Length: 118
Image (cartoon, rainbow, N blue to C red; front, side, top):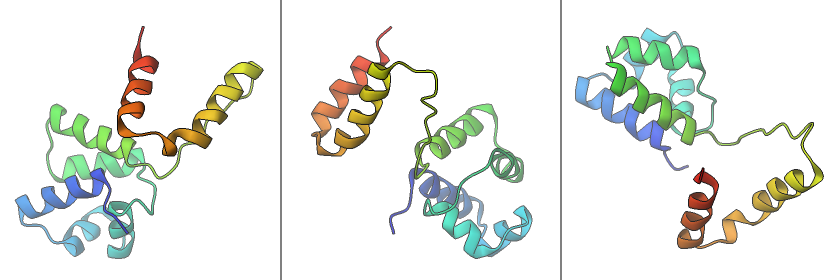
């Protein structure tokens, strides 16, 4: 399985600080297999876990923000509550979910730009 952006960053932190997987897992109170699964995107990364990792590595606010952002983009799935949305809004979300993988990177970039417009 492919390492997530969060996993790559966490591995780099570990390597830069000379910390092996087992040491970090023990410090965080999890198994090495759980920590490895987090790096691979197989396990969810909780807010509590992000706080523990940030504290362990003594990350400053900027580094902490980067870690949190990478955790967000590394989520294997996202749940969207469509309760209370219009039929058009629900159809839009579902159409996007069905079709986004078929789009080229250029088309995806255009869609993202449209969605980020104010």
